[in-house]
Length: 192
Image 1 (cartoon, one colour):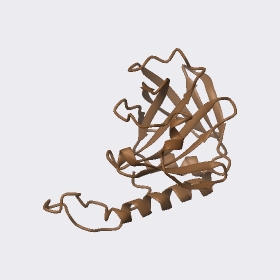
Image 2: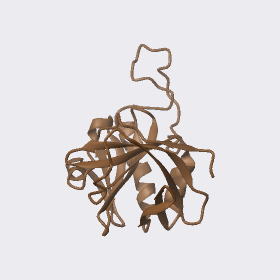
Image 3: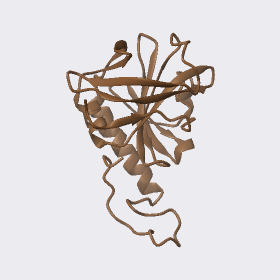
Image 4: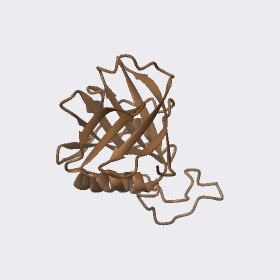
């Protein structure tokens, strides 16, 4: 198992339901993935796709926490309890799974699972692999194709770089111009 821990967060009450993703401005559609801008998270970019099995899947950045996030849900998962934690394994192709503790969050009429990740390897695996499997208590709950994720992930990074530049944001720079940490430096989009 990888050393990294995925932490599901209840504080990330952002729009991600199948209908709700459409309310966030569209940056671009690449290989079936919508790259959108979440205005509720200081113009953080995310990519989103609904799947044939009814699963909605989102991967993106959160400028507020400076972490990446995954949001996944399916209306068939009616037994998810808002506020309850769930241990999941997330596996890309045949790689060692990522594991973590999660929290279900009520968003609109659906309850979704929200995950934050801090390691750039998670996003790299997402972009380089063909499929992702989510497991709960050792049982597969969904397997999703990552077809087009390389190009979509690269566009996600470009979107976030553009949003950062538009707001004058740089690595280590505080949004407070009077702060001692208000300085300019290059931003690595994989440092989330």
